[in-house]
Length: 252
Length: 319
Ligand SMILES: Cc1cc2nc3c(=O)[nH]c(=O)nc-3n(C[C@H](O)[C@H](O)[C@H](O)COP(=O)(O)OP(=O)(O)OC[C@H]3O[C@@H](n4cnc5c(N)ncnc54)[C@H](O)[C@@H]3O)c2cc1C
Ligand SMILES: Nc1ncnc2c1ncn2[C@@H]1O[C@H](COP(=O)(O)O)[C@@H](O)[C@H]1O
Image 1: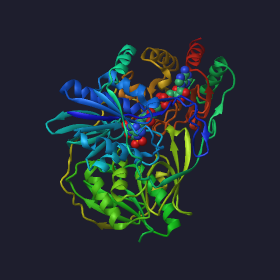
Image 2: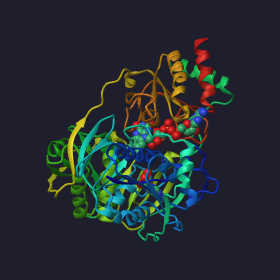
Image 3: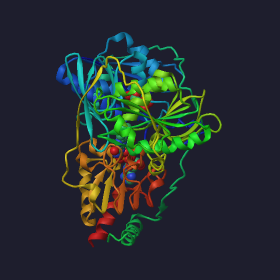
Image 4: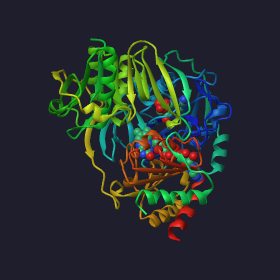
């Protein structure tokens, strides 16, 4: 099985976001691997562990931004990686999908895995858009796979823990929500080895010209503590106040 | 004709989901503006039966077929796409759910219409505009659609399901339910196994999120829960790491809970989490980030370190 995994660096969800009109103020923003992509990578590596094959990781951006993320993926077991479009202007999910489709279309992948969603694009989910670009079947919100000959059985999560199984003909694109196992860790020493392995290459991609058809006119932060009555003071004050709240809620 | 609002009817096990009625409520408001009708497309197994009980839509387009199983991402999407092509609605609404995600993206790509995701609100009064959430609810964005057609994927809670339900029955119209050769085949459904604790039946829930940092720290939260006579629940990442069983997950793909008191510790308040707990009677949130969206739905909040807070409250309760 030959598997492509699309990895995306997103603004660190733990950081406070500053806005700059229609976008984030990105100057001091830290980026981390989108959590669902970590699961997409894990699922790909699990398939490789069981059935053999190769895993190639892709990311859009400059080497600065995405190298570390791709080296980590290679250290975990991906065979090689590609950095696409060093010099691209920022693009939305449609543009990203077009860029990935261009990069992977000639590579005869059996499977393309992405994270189910990234929280920083309004114009749709890249998995399905890549599938549309390549004319491949897709399933999103996948929480497990089991490859068989020429097909793959996937488990899709609906809600309230209800799931459904599907058989999907290959090649196909899957949006991974959760891998069968928690994403593996990798020692820093292995990441250093990966950095020296030369398994990462930069590839030129033309600026995609397909737009999303939507424009962001304003971004704002929801009002701080809009709904909540904020408790002042240190943790002792907070605990005392919470006890009072529990009492007035009738549970103490 | 072209001023109509088309709603994708999500259903499972012979029941239309609340998410669908939320869409119908939004569609009613929009149709009031455009002067068009609210059309609801019911596709798949039992569609004809569902159509007879569906309320709130003016017209119900029924594509009844057993060939697709409970839900087929490709089959349902293809039938819905042909309806969008044929009816050419001004606005197409899908729920931002596991089902809606497959259908919405597909139909938008296939009809070359813009797709607007994470929508809280759609407006048709001055072109097509919407308000959406980005960065897991940390940012709100206003967007403008180029052109006069789009697909909107609506977040849970964007409309009121009760309002949607409250309308009358619609006129039923049968439509073709033909699909070509499908690369995706439905195999079967699985219901979750019952857990040791039913978090939907608890009066008090202590819920932990990624702020708890490691599996070892779960014990500290459990001690607080014990001191409170509460059960421990969690956001999705805690479950995905395997630190607590799936039956403890609150939110979109977990359970919806409405305890008397919900204490959220180190949970950011992503829309997928909020939809499972926002109707709790009293919500108390502790988060080190004063901007965390959880404070938007909490009744009481403390901005600080949960590792300082947990032992204080546990001691106070035990002491
Ligand atoms: C289809 C789909 C379905 C989903 N279903 C669900 C679902 O059912 N339930 C669910 O929960 N999520 C669900 N999610 C995931 C959801 O999008 C978020 O990723 C998730 O809710 C985030 O969990 P979190 O708040 O624990 O983590 P984070 O968003 O990482 O937040 C951690 C928070 O902890 C705070 N923090 C860190 N350290 C401390 C400290 N020492 N003291 C105090 N605060 C601290 C941080 O400020 C941050 O706000 C779903 C996603 C998708 C795509
Ligand atoms: N710029 C990108 N670089 C790499 N992968 C991406 C990029 N954009 C989207 N993806 C993949 O598509 C998934 C869904 O993102 P989105 O569709 O933007 O919600 C991500 O989790 C990634 O797996």
